[in-house]
Image 1 (cartoon, rainbow, N blue to C red):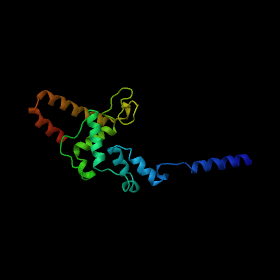
Image 2: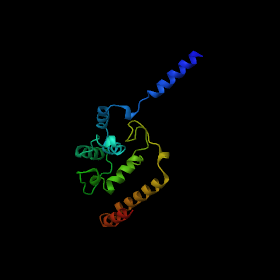
Image 3: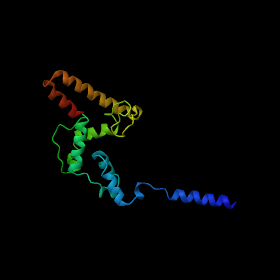
Image 4: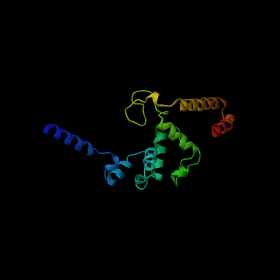
Length: 163
């Protein structure tokens, strides 16, 4: 009987000492946040008041993220980007890029093709149906625009603005 009581005490003690991100010291929070790309740092920053005050999402992080996207030949914002605040930087085009990134739309469907989790293959079943339809419609419009040349640029830009 005493062995069961000791076992019960040790199990409850081990459960209460489990660690999560919030139990780590603030110094580690700051250190971890320096390894994040801009979209991940922005998401962490807005997850709680604690992180809002300590996660840095300045100009250098935004520029590094844009350069990384350019190096991987991914879509980059083609309109004017204001780097002063997160709100001014996250215009419609940047928000769309971050949403596609969040749903792994840009990742290649091959082994090691995931751009978010290095060395992984993305799962197609995690993308909601409504987002697939929305993304496919925009891809069709872009293909049509490429066949029209510069004359279709205005029409397609207007369509994408309304979508």
